[in-house]
Length: 244
Image (cartoon, rainbow, N blue to C red; front, side, top):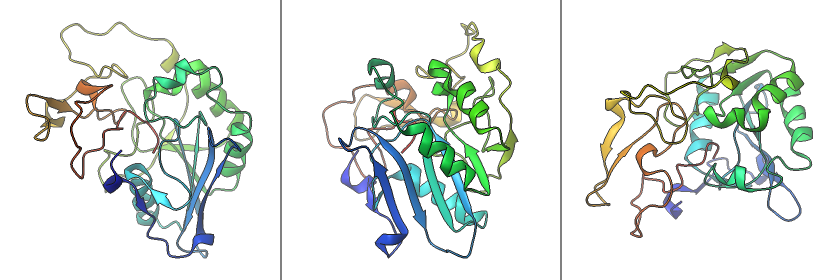
């Protein structure tokens, strides 16, 4: 991720923002931002942490803050199905302990303390059965910004600014799997259909195009290594991450 994509939070006082990491910094268990103590808390549950830290926000966190402010909340809490810090969700399958020893403790507490819980982990949430496991553990009303064809709650980054939360319920369908339609182009990461309206040229990468997956927020046609040239402001080379 370029330095331009990770910025200090606009919140002015350090005690109103922070993050909880494991001692070795390998896991991030919790992140919070407060701009109005008189308003309630909203918690977003995403896939896994990326680069956002105690005072630095990445594009996903800034997007979540915008939603929270628009909906009338004063504090944002962010937790994840997996505590492992990684900009590429494929790393979750390569690690022998991607959840983290204290992840569920912080996840449960952040959700219990919130007035609303929005799940936004994308299609990879079914990895290791975490989507089912966490929804059963929480046992509360959950909301999503939208869902994929297979009922996965979508990632927040590319959802319209005027999106309103919808009640979401895990129904088990996301673990059944499906056979992709050979005539439909699908995201290499989540296998959801790609739409032409999300096709955009990569001007700074001559000869390359990109497709932003509306379901999981992935650089769908360029999942993995990008050409070794600078990334312009506004394009994030770590879009493979499904949190922040």
